[in-house]
Image 1 (cartoon, protein in one colour):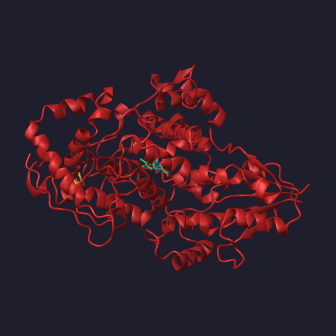
Image 2 (spheres, protein in one colour; image 1 turned 135 degrees about the vertical axis):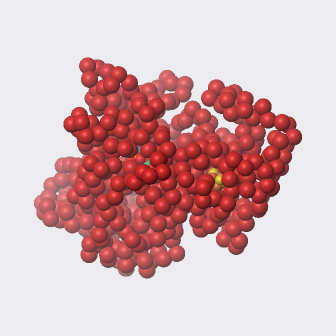
Image 3 (cartoon, rainbow, N blue to C red; image 1 turned 30 degrees about the horizontal axis):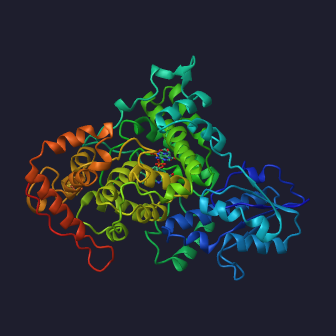
Length: 522
Ligand SMILES: Cc1cc2nc3c(=O)[nH]c(=O)nc-3n(C[C@H](O)[C@H](O)[C@H](O)COP(=O)(O)OP(=O)(O)OC[C@H]3O[C@@H](n4cnc5c(N)ncnc54)[C@H](O)[C@@H]3O)c2cc1C
Ligand code: SF4
């Protein structure tokens, strides 16, 4: 009873459900680099290189174990460039009775898979992806009967179930959450730790050449490419993070600094998301560092919460609510994505920095994504689908199940508050507090009038006014609306006029990045 075991590009884990009962003598593993999966939204060059190189290394590791791997490269002249086509071709090459596959990370692909048995005439065993802490059934049971979902309550259950940072049935330190100690801005003389980066080997070099030729028009810089592409490399990156970066992770988690894209962040999301690292092993490593006295509790707890809390929570919502989830647009946002998201050319220094880091590394940390590029998209009323496509394209760690809820729910509030209790809208004052971006900007967060007035602040007040009907009943928005209502009515009218003039001047094409001069006379 030979089985064809199909492994997708984000399923590079030796303990994958697809591989668990493998019969080395009769079974074959199929892996395929397919153009259709890599051109869905014109991905960042480093993202393509990372996935193809990690796939090739994983195939080599399986072969070294004596497993038969049928690997279809992107340049194979027979390659149909889509998953279904490659499965159909492989079924003609191998005499097998059935196909085994683990469920994918995108609803679109899962939907396609559900038709394989009928279209390909073979039994297809689609197995649950159990490389997560919370199963679909567990999340559905948690969500059942709740009027609103809040990550904090979900997180506490995950802490109880994993036992992470727990003692005598309660949280270590007597609190679930130490965010009051986190979120500090960086002292001027703070020097972030050096990061461990990886030199491309022969396999990666071949992939870099392939991507350079085939995807030269895609977004972002291909080199220097410094990501790990194997499990051993990912484990090294994890160890380095725990030892050198985790101690200050919590304290400066929300800080931003020009020329410092990584600060104390983990840089582990690509490895987790393709399966080179396991979420529980990562959390146990952070917990161990705390128990051994090497990192403070606020750091270990803050980091673990991102993984067993946010990561599992957004995944739960994605699979519980798709496909309808992606179609909602609570704030009726319709504006086209400005071209500067692709070119990085804007006089708003915060956006130029976050997008520039993204171009160079296929990475920006959470606060850059949420409070800079995300905040602008929210305030400017960008159509959710367009900004979602951008995030999916440009980040090395972006896969639908995690990118979509973060962008659609957390950033754009397009789900009307299912995932987050209020929109993460902020003025220039927040960016000024948490970064050094404003000091290098032509605009000034403290200037209220004239051409130096900060567009983010202008758009912030305009956003509150434009969405008053939908947001003012939200208890967590009471304070912003109170502040808005204290403003002189003439000022409010002036803000709206100027915000609209600014937005109308944003270009959605690459002809001339036209940002009108600000004339904000508050
Ligand atoms: C608009 C937007 C889009 C995002 N898209 C993605 C995405 O496509 N893929 C992705 O993995 N993360 C995404 N995130 C979450 C977060 O920004 C990244 O996980 C993080 O920046 C990855 O870098 P790191 O490994 O250095 O993270 P760290 O700051 O070191 O955090 C540790 C780990 O926690 C997990 N994590 C933290 N926050 C989240 C979150 N909100 N959702 C899910 N996991 C989280 C990640 O696995 C991360 O590796 C997005 C956030 C926003 C606001
Ligand atoms: S002044 Fe405004 S636009 Fe400039 S960096 Fe600060 S927040 Fe961004």
